[in-house]
Image (cartoon, rainbow, N blue to C red; front, side, top):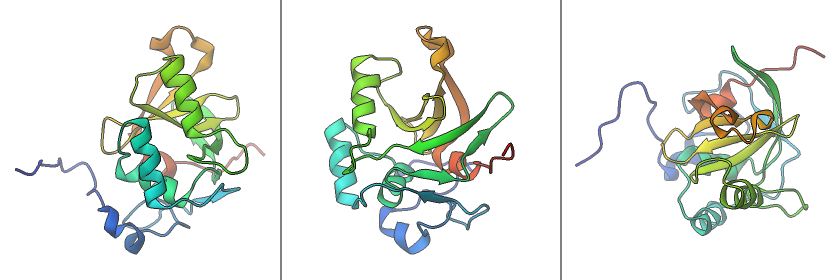
Length: 183
């Protein structure tokens, strides 16, 4: 029996439909971009099979929005790059590459260090971006929309205070990045 989706979530795009529907130059919104989102200084271009192989090595299969992200934007700096809500204002200084051929820190190395070794966040949390102060954005692999959390290191070791739920999935997170108006 098929799982019934609530009306508040957009439909999940099948992997086979990704490239026909979504363009890597635009936002992750399958109904069309609201804001032009680009990534500059990208790392090695990845194939879907490379991304799947790494995800399986880590012990899970990435949800569709995360697969799409790594296939089209492996690392790099999002433009626009400012995340702002009622509680915080921070610049996403870079998204971590899943695999790097330029010597950059990767999602895999950050996951092994922060999640597996130090256990600072739950096991199905994947670091995918870093802010200007060196704090990490994590995505929760327990849900299809890949809910985003921000780790505030100033509260460490109080892990209850460290992890802030941003109240949105990965696609909405990237769609909500704004231009830096302080410059």
